[in-house]
Amino acid sequence: MSDVTVLHHAQCSTSRHALTVAEEVGADVEVVQYLKTPLTREQLLELVAKLEDSPADLVRKDSFFRDQGLSADDYTSPEAVADLLVEHPRLMERPVLVRGDRAIIGRPKSRVAPFLQG
Image (tube, rainbow, N blue to C red; front, side, top):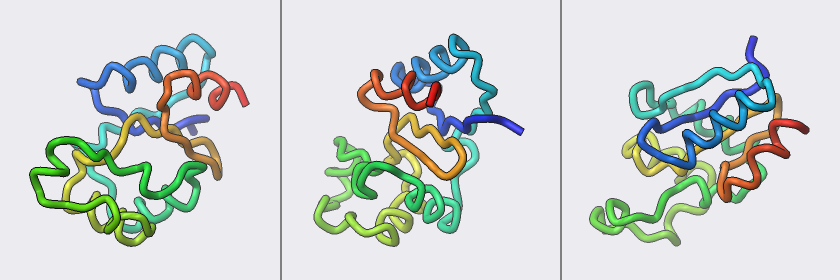
C-alpha cells in the first residue's frame, strides 16, 4: 500500500514537480491520472473531507470555467464541488496529495515537501 496518493495531470509542471519531490524524499506513491480515471462523486466527497484547503480551492477557475458560464460563488460547498468535478474533471486543481486522513493541493510547490515528510 502506498504512503501517498497523488492526483496527477501529466501536462502540469506543478503536478510533475510533486512527483519529483515524492521520489526525492522516498515516498511510496500511487499516481492517479484523474483525467484518465475520473473520481466518482463519493470519492470526491471523501477527498474534500480530508482536504486541509477550502472545498472551493479544489476547483480551477480558469478560462474553461468561465467559458462554461460558471460562477465561483456557486461552488463552495463540498457537494457542489463534487458535482462540478464529476461533470468536468479537468476543473480539478492539481496536484492533490493524499496521505492517510489528510489531503492538500500542492500549490504553491513549497507545500509538497513538508506534507510528504510530515
